[in-house]
Image 1 (cartoon, rainbow, N blue to C red):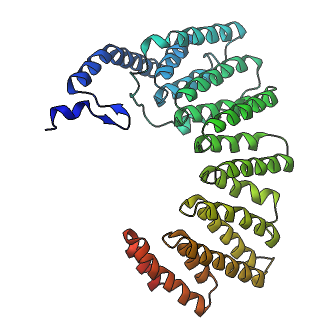
Image 2 (cartoon, rainbow, N blue to C red; image 1 turned 60 degrees about the horizontal axis):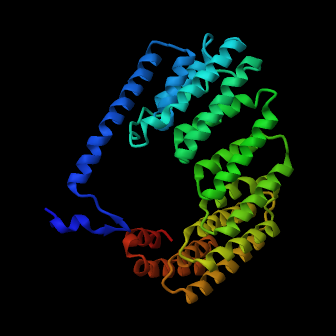
Image 3 (cartoon, one colour; image 1 turned 180 degrees about the vertical axis):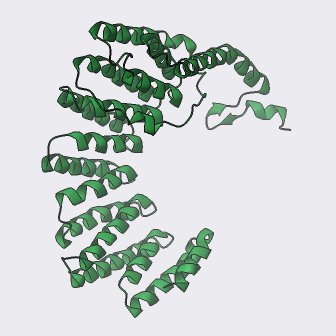
Length: 376
């Protein structure tokens, strides 16, 4: 057992709890946990009995504000909205009552406290979430606006909650089929930008951004703006995996991926790995660029000579970086792949030598590198 005095020591600037303190904290949280479990049981019962009412929406909303990861509550809200007699399909008076009840239910959430989080529901029911067609009736919009308010609140509590992002996407997809489309998408882009300013590597937010952009009517201009946005984010943080990934999605829509276009991308990514050679995000994008170069040599463009020139140039830069950073494995890995991609005997020999060097640079993966040597 640990020494008694250890419990008072600091760990990462935080004092470690004693067993007595931990037990007292658990005891104090029991009433909130019991209340949360009762609330979840109520949602499960209402869903089982198909009680699609404004009160049910308020109960589910109250549960989600305490714990946004209870997937059954998100599924139940979608069922209530789609129900012929539910809050999303009644007349305007019912819609107003539903919205008011949901807001009233959410207003009392604070008393439940945040310590009750941790009750996780079943995985999101994608099949149920996408079977209904969106409606254009004016009575459908107010409840969906409430869903945006609820998901914004839950995302502020957990910006990486799968259930919240899924529900917001479901909601916006239906609002985009109404007259509120333009205003909705403009508001969503503003919210996304704010969230990415706070955490520029939130891949949930980046995925959602691509979804929202796909709904916008802007053509090539929108794609060019998105490419510029990824450039700004990458220049602020070369380790932004999500920005590099988004660039692979948008670049083919605004560029013919010619040699000149790809060379500009090579110049951008070179800034990343010459700045921080141990960060793999830039190297992963470089590998994607290499694949585009090789595909361009095989398709109608057929510029094999240009592709080989690019491979040799990039391999030379990797050798230069290896001399500057002899302990870094990524330039050696990339040089091995580039050399092997040339398809020449000298290239295969250089790749084998590089993989042999990697066995000492990265001994945890020596079996993989030996296998690569055998297949060169």
